[in-house]
Amino acid sequence: MKVAVIGTGYVGLVTGTCLAESGNDVICIDNNPKKIEILTSGKLPIYEPGLLELVQRNRKEGRLVFSMDLAAAVKEARLIFIAVGTPQSEEGDADLTAVYAVADAIGAALKDVPPGPAGSRVVITKSTVPVGTNAQVTERLKAKGAGHVDVASNPEFLKEGAAIDDFMKPDRVVVGVRKHEVGEALRELYAPFLRTERPFIVMTPESAEMTKYAANAMLATKISFINEMANLCDRLGADVNDVRKGMGHDQRIGFQFLFPGPGYGGSCFPKDVEAIIAMGRRTDQPLKLLRAVDEVNDIQKTVLFGKILKHFGNTLKGKTVAVWGLAFKPRTDDIREAPALTLIDSLLAAGVHVRVHDPEAMPNARAIYGDKIVYSDRPYEALEGADALALVTEWSEFQRPDFEVMKRLLKTPVIFDGRNVFDPKKLEGMGITYYGIGIGKR
Image (cartoon, rainbow, N blue to C red):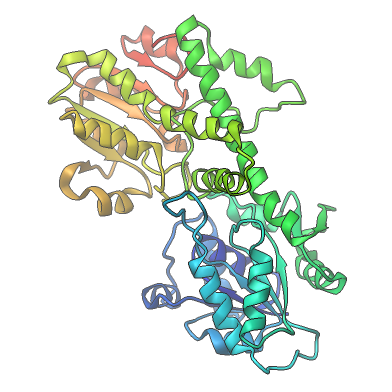
């Protein structure tokens, strides 16, 4: 099947590459010449485990092409995915400027172009978009003279750091369509990924658009809930790690997304929670629970700094703190809304010197902080001369360090563990002062 994917960001690049891997002829379009130059040179503008190898293989075999020529691509394609960014506006809504611009360009390109021999063309919104966007894209295509083009919704459920597996082995595929034959075309496209009987769920476009927001809002709610319980455990002397086990073994609750930490970040949860709150506000249906989820997360991002400030008190200014982990989660270089940035900003504002290490995200952090902080190529290098370590992102290489080496390198052996990956009893037995999240020590 001939497929065009408009947008080579995280979602578009993963989608186009995985569809090419399953045998489709895919052309990925972007209006950013630098991105296209990077991709055609065999490199990636983002870090995602396993993606580079798939891109290189499918380019070599001719199934994956990168271009800036949108009009030519959509005229050849049966299925056209819109996978451009929908950043948060000042009011909290999703900014659909790029989505609508692409829809207009597709409509102009397909004006008076007849359906292909395999059936009508289908434009699919893959970007995360508010309820009603499918209908708006349909109207814009008609206004440009492409009223014969069908429009479907197909939200993505990709986790950064595990996106290839999520696409190749999905929990489910959700599509929103208005015609049975459009749903069948998408079922055919996704058939190679559903051989283990994972569900292909067909619904209206409005329901599909809502499903994406509802799913992310639910996951964000679990994170904010366990973080709030962790903060209460700190005050009451309970250990949230034990509480989490006691809760998670209840099959109605489960363990997924039930890990305390410094708050959620990334390109999805913060933006999508704000967007669904905005949808409620526009329809006079206030979402009080999700407003609380968002507020709890904002507060949680300050918890690590609060522990550091309480420990050092008036002596904090002039101290040096090492930070392990900058990305909002492991196995990605994405620092959008990352809790580490909130911590670094607070440390710098308090007159603290900051040394950082992250396996992938340091170039992105350098673009923000420049020479305001020190970048260390190795984890232990960041500890040299530091008064404390703050672990913010639980990369696997941080989880089994040599604590004797760490103790020697740190001026004062103090660790602030934002992910509860270290054993408090072991560290305190070694003479290392330890602070975790929700373990009864504020």
